[in-house]
Length: 262
Ligand code: T3D
Image 1 (cartoon, protein in one colour):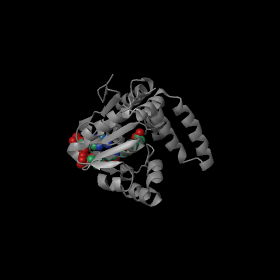
Image 2 (image 1 turned 135 degrees about the horizontal axis):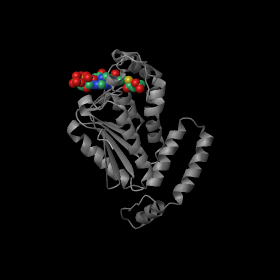
Image 3 (image 1 turned 45 degrees about the horizontal axis):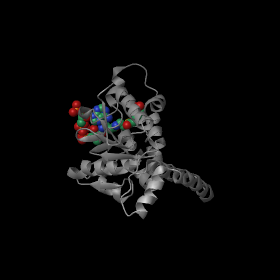
Image 4 (image 1 turned 90 degrees about the vertical axis):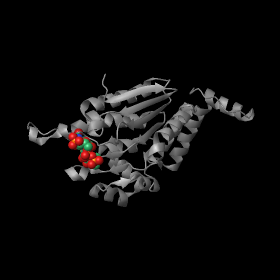
């Protein structure tokens, strides 16, 4: 157990808070393991029907804790390929594979891997004061934590390259205007809005939402024909859920559906 990530489940929402505010929630090994465990819990517990990821204090996350990478401390240089494969990539893969909505509330600066972990989530809301910084080039590294993939997919090469090569901060309003995130929200309203969204999705038809996520993620690499086949298969599965039955019944009875995630 560790308090570097706070995890609490309430009404179907697993709230996951990065919690090293004095270091702008930068990642040490303990925090990596705790974040990965939180997403594994989200996968394993049927009661979890949505995840809300955010950061404690004034930042979301400043990426890797560079104090743990201090070359002046001596010793052999760490193999960063190994640290990515061991600590970052398993969590990123879990976020994409989790068939439940993951909402990210970017409460403040998101730099390096911190920015790209946020961009891996399904729906990203950011406080108007938040900034996204591809800080890697400032220290001689490349955009990791899926950043080279997400930035390019979402923004195209011109903006992806400019952000990554210059490490200029991108403000939340521009990130939203560019389609990098879902929306920028006034600071004071961020958590309320993110919580309401998470609660709404947690009360939704979880299996259908999970299949929707799977389909949209698959679309980027599939042909139209293959995607139609996948839609057929996923719709078949969705059509067998109790939530679909409830959804149609509620519509015909002119009432709000009560989905149970089954
Ligand atoms: O290593 C591997 O395994 C490979 C993986 C790499 C993934 C990566 O993420 S590499 C990129 C690492 N991150 C960065 O390069 C960002 C470094 N941080 C910053 O550039 C700035 O802190 C920010 C732009 C994020 C915020 O600036 P500002 O002025 O709002 O805050 P600050 O004063 O710089 O930071 C506040 C404190 O947090 C400060 O500590 P202090 O002086 O009050 O004791 C600062 O040192 C600390 N802090 C911020 N970021 C990090 C950090 N400490 C350790 N590591 C950090 N990344």
